[in-house]
Image 1: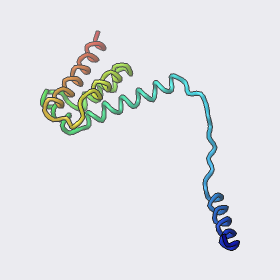
Image 2: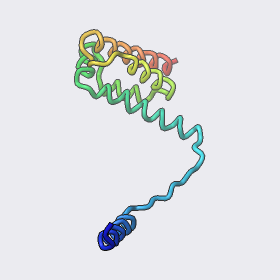
Image 3: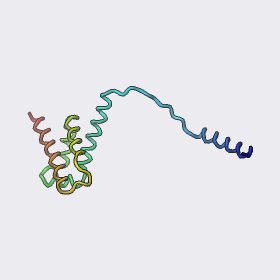
Image 4: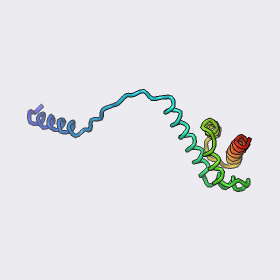
Amino acid sequence: MDPLLRNMLCRLLIALMVWTPFQMANAAMVGTDQVVASTAQQDRAHVLAVLERGEVAGNLQMYGLDPVQAKERVNAMTDEEVGALARNIDALPAGGLHGAGAVLVVLIIAGAIWWAVTRYNR
């Protein structure tokens, strides 16, 4: 290899290495409460995102449930209840919420809301 080309290639590699940002990794123990809290937040966000869908909101209104009130009730649910509801929503088949799938989602959400309301009214 030509010494001039090798010298230019070395300088280019050195310049690229200087430009490369170096990040230091910090390893620490993650507590169980942190993992549970982030999972609960993700589940709650997932359920609320399902309630935001136009077709689900329309079906809730068709069954006489106000979508805003449904969101308030989901926010009032415990983390375990929201987790169970999120798992039930995730268990539905993929491919859209048409027909029976939409009705099933609405029934699951309405059932969870009914269960939460009756539980808190005791």
